[in-house]
Image 1: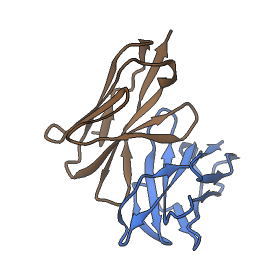
Image 2: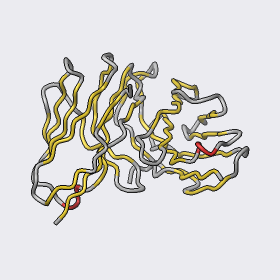
Image 3: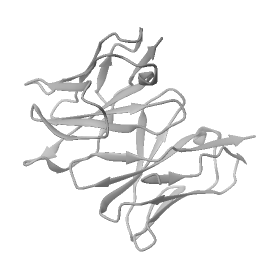
Length: 117
Length: 110
């Protein structure tokens, strides 16, 4: 077990709705990265939060947003859900050095499987 | 062109076989390289990091060729438990922002 938890495990939403996914990072880690994994594809980087600030973003529209809390847990919010948002959403916990670059191994949570109907 | 390209497979091999996976990456600024393993409907887990000098961990050997932007993974004496998807992963620019390939599916059969 990595110590990284995500909730909920499964979620079904309809187009146009909004969703919030949650991630608790491993103890001692200051960084959470979020990834989207569509069926048959590798995970794609959405964004990363380091010490409560966004520290890089992938090629995802602004309706994907996030937060990191003082205890380093994190939320991913997706507004105006589309059918193509159906995927496994993974968070990964790690510890970056001061300045937000360079770091140790990332540990992935079990993921939240989102289905948009 | 995808940033990280892998043959999706599946590779169906008998137990005890040696199997090799290859991967190419497009960003010459990539700094760190990894192989992850992902079991069906589970999260990816780090299998091994990849270095230019090559590295070995038991039955697994990984190699990096920076000039050709090519990464390989060799699995010797395949076990049934090796059946999984193997993801080639690169990281550029520091900060643990990973770029994954599509993954190569391995099925080891009796």
